[in-house]
Length: 352
Figure 1 (cartoon, rainbow, N blue to C red):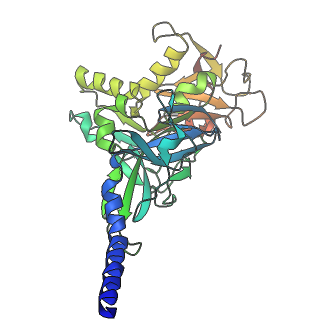
Figure 2: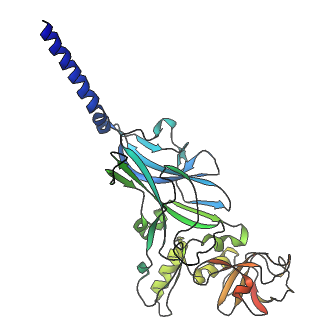
């Protein structure tokens, strides 16, 4: 009798141990099936994150939240995320459908920005625009976290000898990659999920939602939005098909050229190349900043065209210390004297 009780006890213990060992496996098999990864953006501590694209005033803070969307066995969508709340296409996701990651494994989130390979690309022949490849720049200095503070500074000039100063405005495309490790000491992930990549962005920019743009107000808006993007210039022999493709990519916010910048500045002011009025502007200290020329106006000498930005020299006077947006071999902010050395320029008043 005692042996029988002992054997029963041993069997019960073994069954309980097996159940405990199998419990994570069974739970994982019954867990919601992950369908895809995406990025939600929370603006200025609002408490609600949304898929992009998002356009912000300069100096507006934002948070990036990774999302793993899944489907339960009964077909209900649930969202693994650390966002305080989610809204998709104007519809608020129910709180019970949001959950932090509570499944087995060590989960890490790796963030990348999707950028042109260089700030400036000049095609030398009639090769297709596909040679201007957008690629992921892994942001190794960003936390391996589901939610991080947003940062618009580009990475494609970090390796250059003189990277451009970042002024807080521009456009950035994003990707997140989730990696699940069986053990935190493992070198390779057991499973991965990633939001749409650079190929998806290049082939279908209108369907790519993970974009943030911070722009300056008024007439400075179009020109300030292209910082962080690659400037792409075609050869003189480019076909009309190539030129139209470049215009389409610029309209999608993927790249820009000198001509598309001028076009967009004029378009925002309700003007065209055939209707703009160019006037002579003194650069010797006789022109009034805010009167004869204002932020957002185009300044031209020869083939060089810039956008006037900020009064940095003698207050109220257009002089060489004032800052302009210059689009020579990539978007950059430069003093006026570094761009134009003569006594006068032509100005197109777009800020009126």
